[in-house]
Amino acid sequence: MIIVTPILRIFDYSKAVEFYVDWLGFNIDWEHALGSSSPRYIQISRGDLILHLTEHHNDCSPGARIHIENFEGLAEYHRLLIARNYKYISPGIGRAFWDKAVIKMDVIDPFRSILTLTENKTYKEI
Image (cartoon, rainbow, N blue to C red; front, side, top):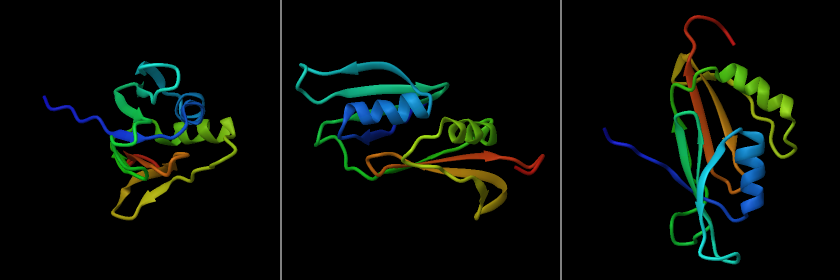
């Protein structure tokens, strides 16, 4: 089995935790830093979804986009996020332009990366 783990650039650890952990509901699995003033490298997860976040300037560029397919319960997750009232973004949800049987939600993190979450919803409207 091949496993691909996206690495997203972050600039501020506390903003990343506020967004990914407090609002999106990810867990911090582990983190690495050489000292209190060195950049951090973090693995976060939400169920089977695993992401790496890095403050290291040479790991990757800011403003990436990742496509997350088969996100079960996307409409319910959207309602949960809206109820949490994160003051910097209020994402919409709707049908994907490429397939009307798919719903999608784009979430933009504080570092300009975009997470596109999709779910096949042929059995009912959102």
